[in-house]
Image 1 (cartoon, rainbow, N blue to C red):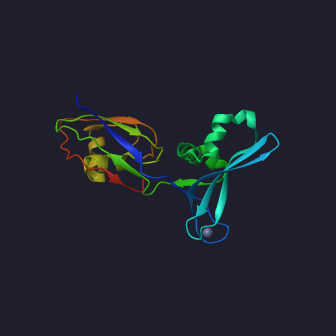
Image 2 (cartoon, rainbow, N blue to C red; image 1 turned 45 degrees about the vertical axis):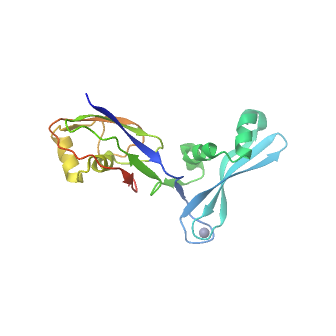
Image 3 (cartoon, rainbow, N blue to C red; image 1 turned 30 degrees about the vertical axis):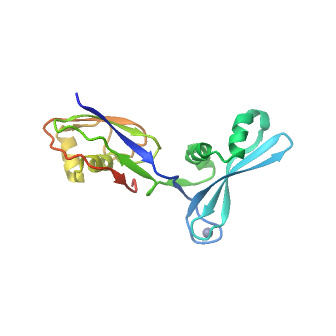
Length: 195
Ligand SMILES: [Zn+2]
């Protein structure tokens, strides 16, 4: 059995869909910085973002009035040093996004890395290194260099076996099988809007 792995990789941080209070822009970018404020033994931690159009800085609340002891020295040190992994984790945290009323815009922020399949079908594991919501049909179109119609047809006829709906957005790992009868030309990957 021919097993290959395809990866959804982040190429940069996603942007935040969140309206600016000063201008008409609906997009913010992460600044790469945290800001902390201590009040006795309580800490506030924000992620600083700026408007993509006018540059106005806004704050995304990460922790509000949380005891220093709860965060712990190691985490506080990472916030103080603007640790890039902590910034990515905070930005992509769904609870933080919900509380701060933003959604992520992944356009141009990810790519699909494709391992070529042998011509005789096989098993593909799609791994999400970043949680980009993408319709599987788009991943298959790109990875197999097939049109949307061909992908849908192959799934319908059983030449491609998918455990999930090809048209429902996925953002976590899944696998699919390609029957030897399906002629495919492996794609080279690339960037997309993920819509
Ligand atoms: Zn603005």
